[in-house]
Length: 318
Ligand SMILES: Nc1nc2c(ncn2[C@@H]2O[C@H](COP(=O)(O)OP(=O)(O)OP(=O)(O)O)[C@@H](O)[C@H]2O)c(=O)[nH]1
Image 1: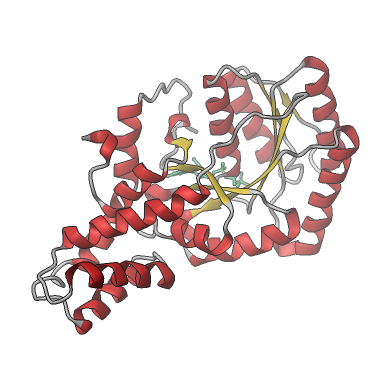
Image 2: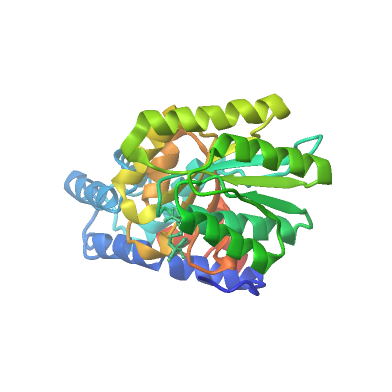
């Protein structure tokens, strides 16, 4: 498990973001390399479009970028840098529409966040990282170990809570997740906690069971506090590529997801999948993870993400 004392200054984060997305930007460079040594014509435009699709940016974005390139450079020499600059600009435009860091807005408190996703997506560590972000903003946080199916998930959350000095409400393995969530909300309300983050089970193999369980959790939370949960956050593992996209569809259906966190962008050359996920689902992107340490998950910043994905220097770095 990762360490907790990880202050992550802003420059350090930009460096990590760039390193984390290095495989993805490297793949884009590789796909584009050697393409731009002749004047831009229809055949070259098609090759560039294919290279962008092969970089997981999705066909719609690839088409828009090549259309812009044609408008700017037809019959003229283009460089890889010209294409990357357009990729960065287009990705930034699309991602700016969906970028929305999680905010503590509920009044009265607690702001209640339900976290959903398949096992192994990085859900538990993401909860710890989000808690860390809220602590950095001086909010007090409580966690609820609502993945009652697995002892390891409960223990892992308790360990994180202990390290960060955050209370963790947990129950027995096999216990009722909804009543645990209700107890946690009651407790958080009583002690004046700012943010309650609730873990949930992620067994997609039993879709109907999962849907019932998540619906029940939401129902009982509402019984205690009509506006809860204030966010239903889906954690996606970027390394699962296209699978991540189909998980969005399932979890939108079973859990009424309101926003996304994508983890493990450092472990894949397919970082473009976040762009495809945003375009396809229209869901808000709250944060991205590029490593295992607490400071490796930060609120989503479209300009820096776009620049890192395209392998360009971002404005804030220059
Ligand atoms: N490289 C990398 N690893 C990550 C990231 N986020 C989480 N992980 C690792 O992914 C693994 C799974 O994370 P967990 O938090 O245990 O995932 P989970 O979804 O709760 O999975 P279960 O506990 O198995 O249900 C752990 O080893 C994490 O350290 C990330 O952004 N980058």
